[in-house]
Image 1 (tube, rainbow, N blue to C red):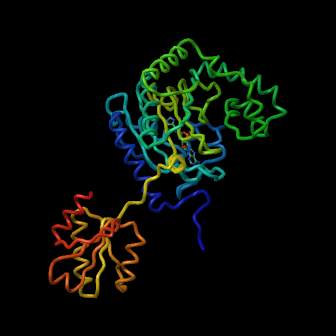
Image 2 (spheres, rainbow, N blue to C red; image 1 turned 90 degrees about the vertical axis):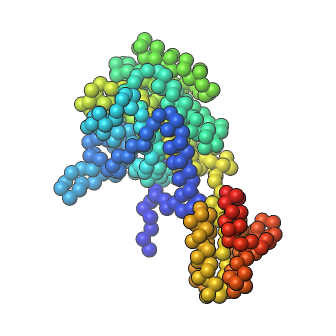
Length: 417
Ligand code: HAM
């Protein structure tokens, strides 16, 4: 038997309906904030991710699905959605219209991680990117958008952490300090982190090894190394956040696992999710577009993981119930089956969800099917009903029956919504 690849999932109703619901909610809310949908390819040139996310990050060094196509070009299944949007912006800035350009995306991402609850190799993200403004009010708007979405889909008890990573210079200064500190802890670090200390010390923060985590508890904090401008920007972000009802904590150790971040970074978690508790996160990446050869253009965005939102909604009892079927139609014999089929199509044309047993079963077996399904109403068609044009419509909840003609049934079903 061929099984699905490790770390992937098949989605069937009602789980697939949760994905559709989360997409719908995002489209509705993001539109209110002025974001339009963008679709980018599922695979991109490998270079795009190595250069933007950073060669020494876990994602690039260990987790990418990279392959050569038939012409020997190195391609990678996208591990995230920011770099593809930046690539598209640099390729054709005018197609993004007026700045700041606001786009959102929905789709699968791929990371070769060790699968566990809430962590998959193929997973769904919804994300937004706002390109073309460095104003702190945009940072607050973006954080508000993330938190409003999570609220809209019913999640409560969330922890929002924010931090500032400063600018390139601040980061360089901080990296040196961190390097000095980590060199004194080298004996306690894992093999990978010992290398990271020299090449990219910030990445030690992403290591999942317990000893490495312990070693950074007293590490210098990036927030203490940010320049006056960056500090002023961060103060403004906090000021604008004060105009919202969002509760947050400044977490000086929050650096996020990508090299492209500058200034504001943030992450939101749910304590109910266990080890993989991050629902979403993001931040500014003011240098990424210029580093890639585009005109210097500041930008900010976030993404959240749908599997984790579904899990959190489940834990908080917010999952959607499977869609209820309005009407179940049973029939007595082959002749009435044709009438039942006609009625079925008529109901569906009138926006009423309806179904019937497709292969002929005796009436008892058909009625048993109606009992097993979550059905609102049920009716039986036989020669008598065809002759009289009246059908006994049974309310499956109250078990009451009423004799009605087709028009009345359609009206009743529509009224019930
Ligand atoms: P990220 O923090 O790597 O950020 O991913 C965002 C969210 O995707 C995570 O908080 C988590 O919910 C979900 N996620 C990540 N990896 C997995 C996985 N293996 N299985 C299930 N869910 C996962 C980014 O991807 C950035 N591009 C966000 C961003 C946009 N920054 C600026 N703009």
